[in-house]
Length: 72
Image (cartoon, rainbow, N blue to C red; front, side, top):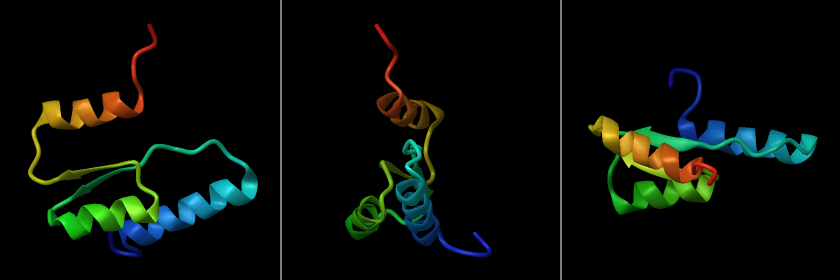
């Protein structure tokens, strides 16, 4: 991202949510960085899940489904 990175953006979003008592939005990292430390950094910043590029459509849909399970 040209202005700020995803980690910084996530931290800012989480801070705003906390300060304004907003419902937490779901954040899934989509990144070419695929080392275990990258996953850890994303989750530590407050992201909800992680998916490394390149990814397949079904992988993305599976991650989204985990965040928004269908009501039964």
